[in-house]
Image (tube, rainbow, N blue to C red):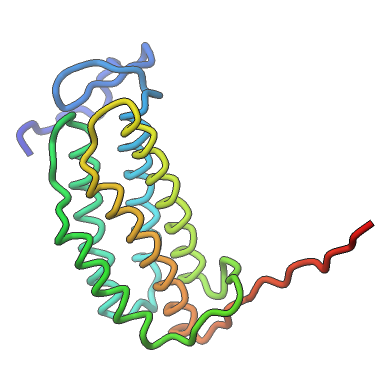
Length: 186
């Protein structure tokens, strides 16, 4: 870290702007800040999953590595034109996803979020990941964005879904399958 924070508050954002890593000031609700802010929120949700006491070691290690990549992605998004996330990061998620999914029974119905605290936290992270992906796509409409960032978030949301299924079983929970309301045609 190049600059050490000696004071957390600066008052420079009191006017509704924030500073990018480039030094440029932008509105706090601009697409770029929304994108990296939602990635930061996702990282916090992954931290919530990691705070669960019953995580298997392989899941804990994987999620810790993901937190580091999400911090990298946030930094990438904070600096226009910067690229940090690479295809190997996405391929690594696919490898883990395939390994975890191979041991699960096939899905025939939608799974409702929940089952156990760890699984529910993982489902929350998954939904925030989907929002982060949407925010990055919004940014991509107006500015150049590393296309691998979108692929990474897309694959990460899939992985978080599969991890939620694994964690539900690890903790002895039961997945709740969606029971759609029967159609009533008038």
